[in-house]
Image 1 (spheres, rainbow, N blue to C red):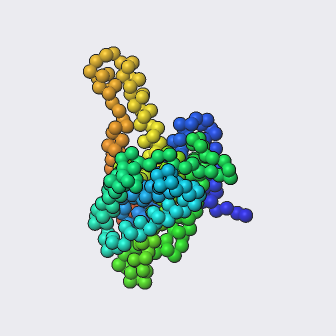
Image 2 (image 1 turned 90 degrees about the horizontal axis):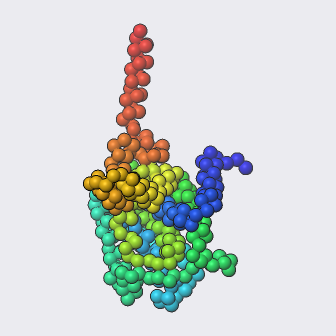
Image 3 (image 1 turned 180 degrees about the horizontal axis):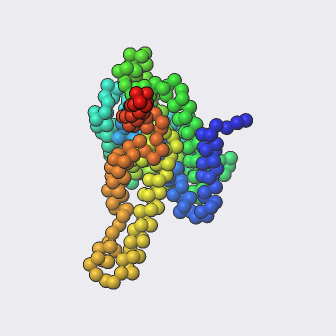
Length: 362
């Protein structure tokens, strides 16, 4: 059996991902990997909506919340319901997909700024709903003591390693599904709508069902991530699903490369590492440097710097720099790169044609 270069790269990447926890031998490192994996799963779902179909969604964290709360309500003492985790994975994904359709239905005629505003509103409504329906959701305290997954009689417990492998398996499933969707007729219809919705409609594409399918598929990935993430934390609360989470996931796509699965994964890992590892470590280094300096105004000011409080400033700078110097992302899709640099390609072709014409005259 001969593997394609893409399949070989994917197999190598997953082999490295499986080995990483055993290289680190550190619970905090494994916990970081599991959290980063959950955001990779979220970014893969948002990539379907934004990268494939071109539908700007600024409220994607709402589906993350719906998946998490679906698991919490059906696998906790909150209502005395304790359904198996493996069943709830599909239930949470399905509930999130239904809400994706409910969001998509009233936005079918909207694009661009108007669609972004509607999805932004939806992303704010969902956490506020969970916050205020305290008799069902626990209000600001959320729902705790969630059931732990059991795999062939083995309870996951509080060890993060099985959760990491669970999320890794979900990522493998998501990559396989997203890659097949991109190459399918539905995926080509998404890309046609992204390029020109009116032309796509005239070509016979049913834009209504195609856009609803994009919202549903993206939301289902988020529901999977929400279920796995809530089971790992053993707690859900409304403050985990604010607008900043939606922006964080969207920044992962912009950094890695919208529409390209390897780029999305790379962007997710890099921003997760920046958020959970590099900024706290950078703050510690600055504080250590401040202690080593002679006492004074500069060392006192340096000792009070906390880079983690400036994370969104840093994300904003990264996004601005990406838009200025590499708008297609770190690993762009070939199609998007051609779109963004079509003017350069046309200029090069014209220059080459001019040179040939000059040589012919001589």
